Image (cartoon, rainbow, N blue to C red; front, top):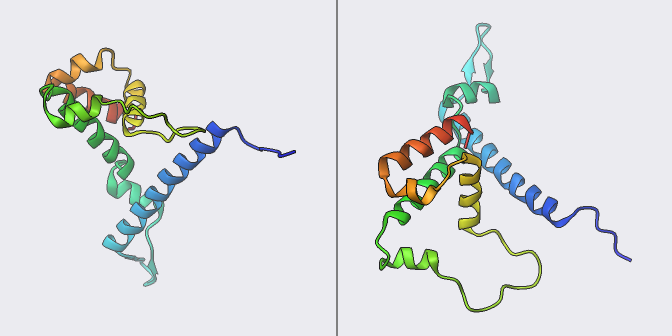
Length: 146
């Protein structure tokens, strides 16, 4: 008998959270290298804390930037003509079956989850107007911390 400690969705969510955490750590590491250590009043050098880095970045991070770019691209693809290859690939559904087990998350699945978090109704209509889509993405980024 095999004991499985986690349900598969929890494991996948933990993997996703782990990847996000690794990206955030990498970003802070690079910012520390760029801004370097600071000299204290007593002459010692100290590295920047996570809070100081967050203050430097003004609350913005790599994850929010990636999600914003993904949403911008989705709006761009939705505004494309139906016969453009990128739009056709987005709509394409493969004829073969997916492998057994939990399917890997697709790009579109992540983007639709972000849209769900944004609470945008009729996102396809909103995406047709570039200005309203840009406003919706920016509003979601500030209010929902995308």
